[in-house]
Image 1 (tube, rainbow, N blue to C red):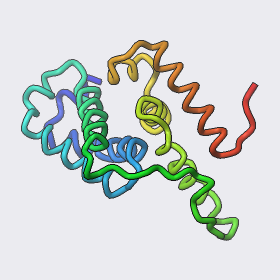
Image 2 (image 1 turned 90 degrees about the horizontal axis):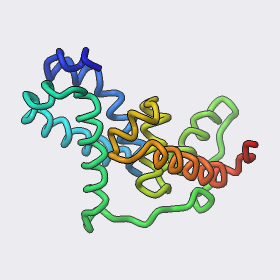
Image 3 (image 1 turned 60 degrees about the horizontal axis):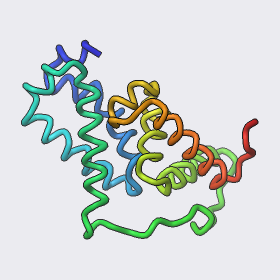
Image 4 (image 1 turned 180 degrees about the vertical axis):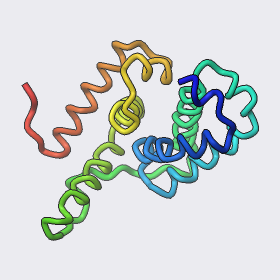
Length: 167
């Protein structure tokens, strides 16, 4: 995406900020933690903006920074918490009009229980709408590994959400 390379830092943040937030929400359990990680990444990106804007793909560069920062976040012992299986979450009752929001929250909770690589691949593929080749570049893995992690992650999501297995 050479368009973003020509943008200044402020324009880049305005254009890519919502996508970075969505990606972080898919990678981290707590929305507040996701916002903190995005802010940390954007602060670091500001300091390196000359190098980032000169890169072939500034979007991939910043996405990679976000994935790395999310991984570092979980490695910090202070921040660790036990994951909760979706079936262990307290039941919520809502009218049919609110059911899609409940379904979305349940899906995000299920995504957050996936192992790191699967969570990253699923988040990049479905929240950031990236193609497998681009995900492979961002996560520094082969396209085959991306597809395997996506397949396994989706299988776990189907099981967690109690969805029928696709044939």
